[in-house]
Length: 552
Image (tube, rainbow, N blue to C red; front, side, top):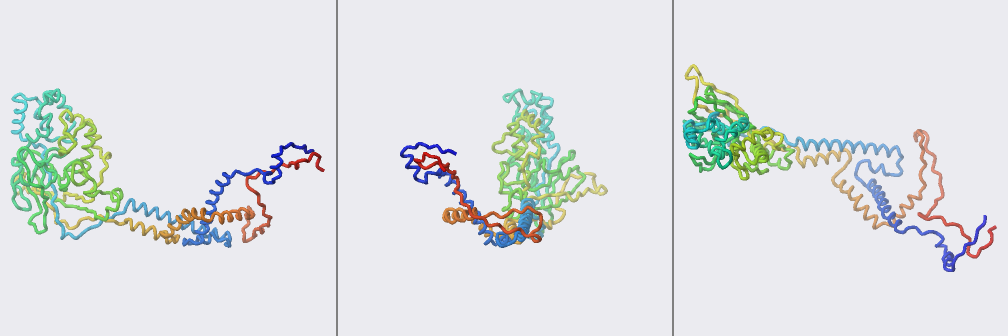
């Protein structure tokens, strides 16, 4: 093989005399980048060994010991893995229990210290119209020649509900009733609530001889008019009764009625002048209002003289506030602010939801809702819009309401009919009373709170793994702060450790299926260490300068 001489300049010959220039210099930046990441990886590897050797977790130290045989390491790894999986499964089940069923409802029998509130009794006459007032009002509005359906529209407005609102289109088509525009519309078409107040029976013409706990009381001092989703009604002991009405102004602040164990009677009784119509009776909590969420307890047709009911009162302890609404499935009275009520109740939330949906569809609400800031009453023409969207407005699935944490349910237990053999076949009086003194009430309290959850987690993790809260701190400490600090502070030691690890001969890989206790693996063959510089390319052979002859 011939080696042809190469011509170099004088400066190039001086550079070739230096042997350091015979090899290509590696990329310094690339070496620094590799060194930074490799140091961090080496530090994490070292901290893993330290953590396994010094950890308080059961069985972990035996996995990292070098002197242990593979079978023993695998055994301890299996036990540790089984313990970790069992711990995770039990912790997940405990978390699901905490999220879905953290409360328990039990009986509270300490009834002697109770102030038992009497329920609100809502009396809804299916025909609340006073015929004399109706005739006078029609003559005042339309004169001697009123529209043909004037009386029907006014009666419809007095008993307006979501069930009967479909008749709105029947009256809207008559321009004599509602006018062609708002300018020439009649007063009942523009202000239906005021029209209803002008034609319904007054309290003194509807009830007489009322009794409260066995004592005679003035009926108009006990009952007050109230608009519900069932129409115009009168209510006893209701916070949502009308504060003022045209024929009387109620200035006294509402005072809830209570009963005591020593009272002669636990009842409210009234007599009705009306004996030709059916009266629907609603018995509910004082804070609530008769509506779509409540069913009629009794339709009075004068054959029953006494309605006996029982009470189921449920309250929630204050420690349940630590749970979320989704966990305890109830809302405290002061926890969520409503536009239509000062305190939260389920019926108030549903009522507000329907009002909001009515406003979103038709820009107004029916007049049977309480007057609320930001809500405008619908005219008769606008009630047609409500009737078109009544299915969407009354859809309960579109309202996100929970029960109140304190709520009361009243159930009719007994209906006492009149004795036909001793008197007339009908009666004008109806008495609503407790069937017996309430002996128990229900208490909802926390069964599984945050402290119980923490204790359960710690007990399970300690039982299966010997894990504690400080063990978790150590785990984070070893693989974050300590690993980063070691990569910066002990860089030289880590480089040396990494070089020794890379230079160490790799163990043989025996892929046979013969167990070690039958045929141990052959001892590793010692091989000389070969240190190869990284990223160094071998130099090409070139003769020294001045050589022009063939090499021997």
